[in-house]
Length: 373
Image (cartoon, rainbow, N blue to C red; front, side, top):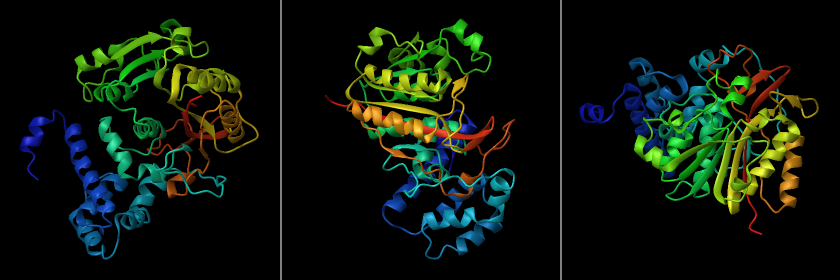
């Protein structure tokens, strides 16, 4: 492929790499949709996604010769059984656990429900497509998965369209507002008042935003478009302002913010209150820290709390009583990387699950459809 024209249109090596990967994702998606067998292009795709490198000539020739009747999914499975894959990801982790697996199908992008991050979701063209949208290279990291989960949930609900109105809580330095602005949404983003954020350490860790310009991603969205469609204000998530509760947004969201509100009860109350900001039929999308190692003991108070399955089930029952819809899937994943977790100081390239105090935590996404009554 000649890169002269493409290189002239893209301003950085990262943008060029992202564009090349999107072309591979798009081709693989079309091949899978037609039930085609794997091709050498899929071999290139597997090297980049699963081994994080360009194929060497010998290895590429060997894998291409083995294609036979493989589908792209078969090829990915074979790559994950390879010694290099195990050395790169699994052997470096060193901490594993047999997590409880309920008798349900592991979560996927279709249908998207309230679910945990899993390896199979990241090993998908859906994930790569959204990573291209946020101008990041895919990685096995739960925080990046949260961006993708949110965008997929909004896309499924028909919210990524001109004129859709969204409200973000505790937004920090997410790439999401730039994607929403590019898609034509009108967005109000909020975060904690600056002095309160400094006292809590959020400013020092660059997890807090104090203005619209701090959130703009020029590689995603034009600055003038962003400024036209995105507004910013301070907001305490424990006491949502009355005008926001009466505004009737099409959607609201927060990414790993509700577990920092002081207690399990405070975070669950925020989820319920956030729905007051949504018009009937709209959606709320939230992610949070989830205790995947225990449904009994947990961290219930403090700077970071961990929600258990029983806490989320109780929330779902209460929301259903109020007429809202929340579907749950608590399967922790059955891929090779789903068994492992990183420990402080969190140096692994794979962070689907981490040790937090004496528990293992992962990211759980919640997508809630507000009732129409």
